[in-house]
Amino acid sequence: MAVPLSQMYTVSKYVLTQKLKGVKRYPLVLMLEPLFRCNLACAGCGKIQYPDHVLDKRLTPEQCWAAAEECGAPIVSIPGGEPLIHPEIARIVQGLVDQKRYVYLCTNAILLERKLDEYQPSKFLTFSVHMDGLKNEHDLAVCRDGVYDVAVKAIKAALKRGHRVTTNTTMFDDANPERIRKFFDEMMALGVEGMMISPGYSYQKAPDQQHFLKRERTRELFSKILGSPKRGWQFNQSPLFLEFLMGHREYQCTPWGNPTYNVFGWQKPCYLLQEGYTKTFRELMELTAWDNYGTGRNEKCADCMVHCGYEASAVEDTFGTVSGFARTAKLTLLPTSR
Amino acid sequence: MTDTKNHTAGAAGSLEGRVFRPASAAEAAEAVELAFDYRGDVTLSLASGELIVGYLYNRLVADRDSYIEIFPSDHPAPRRIPYDAIASIAFTGEDTANGKSWEIWVSKKESERQAEAERVEADARTRGHL
Image 1: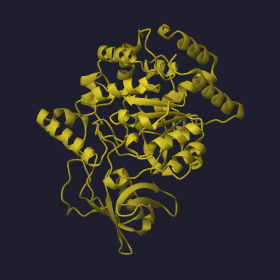
Image 2 (image 1 turned 60 degrees about the horizontal axis):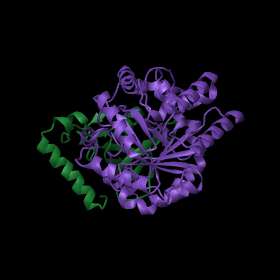
Image 3 (image 1 turned 90 degrees about the vertical axis):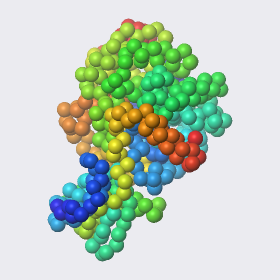
Image 4 (image 1 turned 135 degrees about the horizontal axis):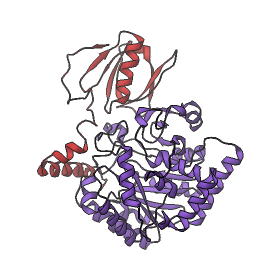
């Protein structure tokens, strides 16, 4: 089982509590971007193209902790930029762990092995290592030779110290299903807890507007990759989201499920689109015209199937319908039954 | 909207180097939207004569009192400027997103890719990020 029972219990309890309270829109994962600066310059990334004085801005630990409290989501994902560049990231993470939130610290792992001493293994902390494929594909995707090998070494070191480690993979339209399946085998052989996958999407400010997946191509690709899953593969995400990627389920986007906070404030409406910012989480929830977003509602969202919009939809399906719950239970206990 | 035209041409498809002098509220709103989408610094010339160079990261459009928010390049705190205080917007900073596509990366000669990768790596090393 990829996700520990304690985490499943926490998320389940949180979602059911929101439902009992009658809360229509609630956050599931806070996307906390403490900085935009990175030590890579991946061609597909639209998060790091800013003037230097913006790249040099950092959220303080206090801002990060306050954002998590204000939002209330049980899970905090920390992407960037490269979070390990932030001089106070270990303190930020510890503060979030002290709040008993499940933290996914996303990293390209270039600095990970060197910084491992700063982190205590905890069920609340997972290093989510960016891996876009086998060595050739990954090094090409991150525009630097040798990064794959560095990341693999860091993963092994983190696992040896007892840390939870997952991988996160963005797939582009040139992904080769057989190579991806081989990549899954290699990652699981390393001993990671699970893998997270998502299609790339040509969000508004990403420089790479031609290389991202369209919806039909997404379904075709993920069907080939996940159609006959191997017994050893574990995915650290909702099994219904994987079914959605394969075209087996239809969802509408849940943009408020993964609210984003960064040096500009709370980002409207989601992690990918930048339509403006609010000062508070409450303003984000109350002032965003949520019905204007999602497939069929907004041309910018037309082909998006990305986890930050649809994983929360899958979780909502799990807890909102009997069929969704039954299917989730079956796929969790028997992942090869897909 | 008046584009002064007397700009140095930026890379194809980029607004880099252009200057907009809105003549109406609608033109001001249009210029602000372009600046909001721009991944580089702009220079705001205010009606007061003040010049502000920085990254325009937010705007609020309202029936009255529309404003932009900008991180000045020389000051850590953001500033809020009403639309009607803006005389011109010049796209003076480098468009950091331009020319960074996957296709351009792949189409480069191996030697060019290597040189670019080494430049990015050296920059990260200089900053102590490697």
